[in-house]
Length: 143
Image 1 (tube, rainbow, N blue to C red):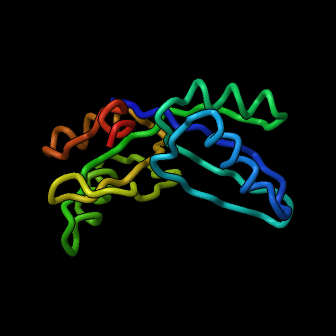
Image 2 (image 1 turned 60 degrees about the vertical axis):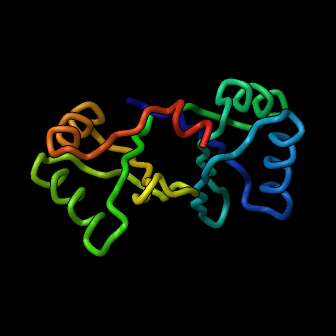
Protein backbone atom coordinates (compact mmCIF):
# COMPACT_ATOMS: atom_id res chain seq x y z
CA UNK A 1 0.00 0.00 0.00
CA UNK A 2 2.98 2.28 -0.38
CA UNK A 3 3.44 4.89 -3.09
CA UNK A 4 6.88 5.71 -4.47
CA UNK A 5 7.78 9.39 -4.20
CA UNK A 6 10.95 10.95 -5.52
CA UNK A 7 12.56 13.94 -3.87
CA UNK A 8 14.87 16.23 -5.81
CA UNK A 9 17.17 18.71 -4.10
CA UNK A 10 17.42 21.80 -6.29
CA UNK A 11 19.24 25.07 -5.92
CA UNK A 12 16.90 27.93 -5.22
CA UNK A 13 17.77 29.86 -8.36
CA UNK A 14 16.08 30.91 -11.55
CA UNK A 15 15.35 28.13 -14.04
CA UNK A 16 16.13 25.06 -11.94
CA UNK A 17 12.49 23.99 -11.47
CA UNK A 18 11.84 24.46 -15.19
CA UNK A 19 14.93 22.36 -15.95
CA UNK A 20 13.72 19.47 -13.79
CA UNK A 21 10.28 19.44 -15.37
CA UNK A 22 11.75 19.65 -18.89
CA UNK A 23 14.10 16.72 -18.22
CA UNK A 24 11.19 14.61 -16.98
CA UNK A 25 8.94 15.67 -19.85
CA UNK A 26 11.59 14.87 -22.46
CA UNK A 27 12.00 11.43 -20.85
CA UNK A 28 8.25 10.77 -21.07
CA UNK A 29 7.77 10.87 -17.30
CA UNK A 30 4.36 12.18 -16.26
CA UNK A 31 4.11 14.15 -13.01
CA UNK A 32 0.95 13.11 -11.14
CA UNK A 33 1.33 15.47 -8.16
CA UNK A 34 4.04 17.53 -6.50
CA UNK A 35 5.04 19.53 -3.49
CA UNK A 36 7.79 22.14 -3.33
CA UNK A 37 9.35 23.41 -0.10
CA UNK A 38 12.17 25.90 -0.14
CA UNK A 39 14.71 27.72 1.94
CA UNK A 40 16.86 30.63 0.83
CA UNK A 41 19.47 28.28 -0.65
CA UNK A 42 17.70 25.16 -1.91
CA UNK A 43 14.35 23.51 -2.43
CA UNK A 44 13.00 20.01 -2.06
CA UNK A 45 10.71 19.02 -4.89
CA UNK A 46 8.63 15.96 -4.01
CA UNK A 47 6.94 14.17 -6.90
CA UNK A 48 4.65 11.25 -7.57
CA UNK A 49 5.28 10.23 -11.17
CA UNK A 50 4.22 7.42 -13.46
CA UNK A 51 7.76 5.94 -13.53
CA UNK A 52 9.85 6.70 -10.43
CA UNK A 53 12.86 4.64 -11.50
CA UNK A 54 13.11 6.38 -14.86
CA UNK A 55 12.66 9.80 -13.26
CA UNK A 56 15.35 9.08 -10.69
CA UNK A 57 17.74 7.81 -13.35
CA UNK A 58 17.39 10.69 -15.84
CA UNK A 59 17.66 13.32 -13.11
CA UNK A 60 20.74 11.70 -11.55
CA UNK A 61 22.31 11.51 -15.02
CA UNK A 62 21.86 15.29 -15.25
CA UNK A 63 23.56 15.89 -11.89
CA UNK A 64 20.58 16.25 -9.58
CA UNK A 65 20.51 14.73 -6.09
CA UNK A 66 17.47 12.45 -6.02
CA UNK A 67 16.10 10.08 -3.40
CA UNK A 68 13.14 7.74 -3.31
CA UNK A 69 10.73 7.55 -0.38
CA UNK A 70 7.67 5.49 0.38
CA UNK A 71 4.57 7.55 1.19
CA UNK A 72 0.90 6.69 1.67
CA UNK A 73 -2.08 7.87 -0.40
CA UNK A 74 -5.36 8.03 1.51
CA UNK A 75 -8.85 8.81 0.25
CA UNK A 76 -10.43 11.52 2.39
CA UNK A 77 -14.12 12.38 2.41
CA UNK A 78 -14.43 15.65 0.49
CA UNK A 79 -16.48 17.44 3.15
CA UNK A 80 -15.83 19.72 6.10
CA UNK A 81 -13.98 17.74 8.77
CA UNK A 82 -12.85 14.94 6.41
CA UNK A 83 -9.14 15.61 6.97
CA UNK A 84 -9.71 16.17 10.69
CA UNK A 85 -11.23 12.67 10.98
CA UNK A 86 -8.10 11.06 9.54
CA UNK A 87 -5.73 13.18 11.61
CA UNK A 88 -7.67 12.25 14.75
CA UNK A 89 -7.13 8.53 14.02
CA UNK A 90 -3.40 9.14 13.56
CA UNK A 91 -3.20 11.27 16.70
CA UNK A 92 -4.97 8.56 18.72
CA UNK A 93 -2.42 6.04 17.41
CA UNK A 94 0.54 8.23 18.34
CA UNK A 95 1.54 8.57 14.68
CA UNK A 96 3.32 11.72 13.56
CA UNK A 97 2.64 13.26 10.15
CA UNK A 98 6.00 14.45 8.83
CA UNK A 99 4.42 16.18 5.83
CA UNK A 100 1.45 15.88 3.50
CA UNK A 101 0.10 17.31 0.28
CA UNK A 102 -2.95 16.92 -1.91
CA UNK A 103 -3.20 14.78 -5.02
CA UNK A 104 -4.28 16.53 -8.23
CA UNK A 105 -7.47 14.58 -8.91
CA UNK A 106 -10.50 13.50 -6.97
CA UNK A 107 -11.15 9.81 -6.51
CA UNK A 108 -14.90 9.50 -6.99
CA UNK A 109 -16.49 11.62 -4.26
CA UNK A 110 -13.28 11.79 -2.24
CA UNK A 111 -10.13 13.86 -2.25
CA UNK A 112 -6.72 12.15 -2.09
CA UNK A 113 -3.92 13.24 0.24
CA UNK A 114 -0.31 12.03 0.24
CA UNK A 115 1.21 11.50 3.70
CA UNK A 116 4.67 10.79 5.03
CA UNK A 117 4.53 9.26 8.51
CA UNK A 118 7.12 8.46 11.13
CA UNK A 119 5.57 4.96 11.44
CA UNK A 120 4.16 4.16 8.01
CA UNK A 121 2.93 0.61 8.57
CA UNK A 122 1.32 1.57 11.87
CA UNK A 123 -0.44 4.46 10.11
CA UNK A 124 -1.76 2.18 7.36
CA UNK A 125 -3.07 -0.28 9.94
CA UNK A 126 -4.73 2.48 12.00
CA UNK A 127 -6.40 4.02 8.95
CA UNK A 128 -7.62 0.77 7.42
CA UNK A 129 -8.95 -0.34 10.81
CA UNK A 130 -11.19 2.75 10.74
CA UNK A 131 -12.25 1.96 7.13
CA UNK A 132 -10.25 4.71 5.43
CA UNK A 133 -9.18 3.68 1.93
CA UNK A 134 -5.41 3.58 1.48
CA UNK A 135 -4.62 3.60 -2.23
CA UNK A 136 -1.93 1.50 -3.92
CA UNK A 137 0.68 3.31 -5.98
CA UNK A 138 -0.35 1.77 -9.30
CA UNK A 139 -3.78 3.35 -8.95
CA UNK A 140 -2.25 6.81 -8.57
CA UNK A 141 0.32 6.44 -11.33
CA UNK A 142 -2.44 5.87 -13.90
CA UNK A 143 -5.07 8.40 -12.69
